[in-house]
Amino acid sequence: MTSLRTKFQSQSWQKDQFVISTDPNLFPISQLSDIFNSSEFYWASALSPEAFKEALHNSLSFGIYDSAQSLSPESPGKLIGLARLVTDFVTFAYVTDVWVDPTYQGKGLGSWLVRCIQETLDEMPDLRRAMLLTGDWERSVPFYERLLGMSLVEPKRGEGLAVMESKGRGHPTYGKTGLGYD
Image (cartoon, rainbow, N blue to C red; front, side, top):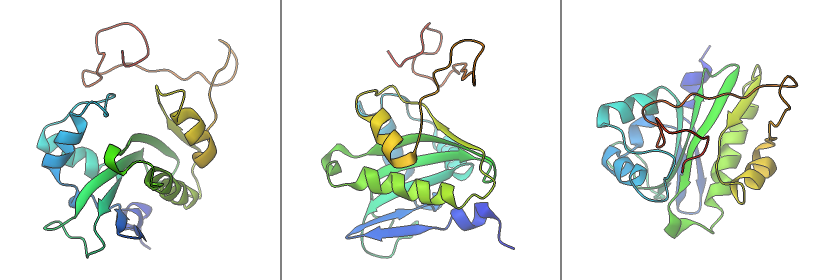
């Protein structure tokens, strides 16, 4: 029997000249560095090439490529969007690093990407919970509520689930107080 990890890390979807692939070997690492260092990617910064490869292989990484041709690590096409599921492939998934190149926004690619993520989550029969964090209340919260069925976790202290965080050295505001990215 094929593991869910193996199955999920070889999926692809096509829409017009765009392809979404979960093959972690297709990601152009130098382009990822540029993306993570861009102002649109405000929640993280670039990693070393080795750390990028490790993160891509230890999560379920979705890349959107502008290429209707056959994708390969040698010619992956232009990376124009990405998302990662940090997951054990069975019970839990954390959605992170969702991004579409600003020049390609408005074409429905972000919605398509998130629908592909939802399709994958739906194939996890023992999934207990999928979660994400966003600081974009205006656009992202309604977007994820609509497309992923996400709900805000806003309990009073002592009631419901407590959602907690501890910022690591890779967080843009490490060492500062507060919960946001400012």
